[in-house]
Amino acid sequence: MDANYMLYQIRADMWNILLAQWKTDIATPKYWGLVATIIIAYIVWYRLTDKTRLAYLLFYGSLVTVMTSLLDLYGTTAGLWYYKVRLAPFLTSVFLRDWTLVPLTYMLVQQYSPNWRQFFIWNTVGTFFLTVIVVQILSLLDIVQLMKWTYLSGFITSYLVATLSRLAFHLVIQVQNATREEKPSALENTLMHPAFKPLDKEEDDDE
Image (cartoon, rainbow, N blue to C red; front, side, top):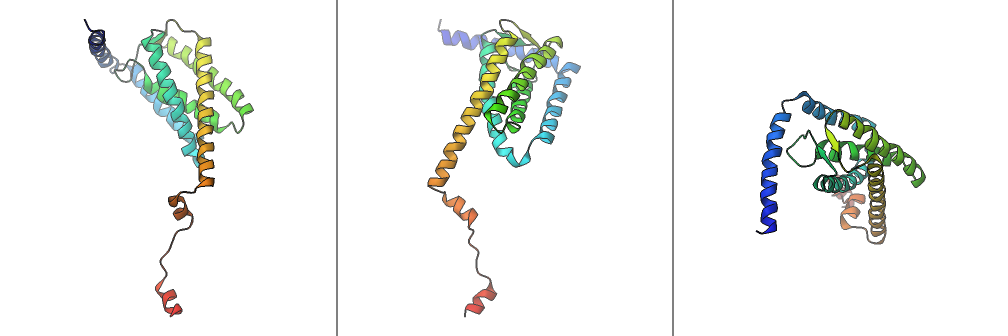
């Protein structure tokens, strides 16, 4: 039998199991507690974040989100851990961890780290919070179950995710700034030096 078709059948069966489990979870207080946690996390982050740097912080947070989601997908597929409660019937619990707690925490780390020395310090604090404190709480609440994964492994990989995301972020910004200096875009010139139509009074004076 074709291996790809066998994987398709397994995924189809898995979807039915996840969907049935999700329908059960959605009626529990634990599920709505996760929803409330996500909402509160975004409210706290929004109040603490520097709105003048919002676009840059969101870009950095997007890099973290992509890398974290890929890591989470690998971990759940390889059986390193699994989730007992999901906000959506996915194999991973992307909403709580990958798309909320991890990127929001690291965006605040990025915001309060004007240089690499401070980033290494705050990254240690943020990563410890995410991989030890948060994971322990989720385990005690019976939301996530670690199998072939340790807190040390989680700390190292999460620390690298934040660091590599910062490297990629600064590389992109440097390329962008260098390109602007060499060849400003037509749109940027228009925005910096807008052309206004002369007023009728000015036209009369010229005549």
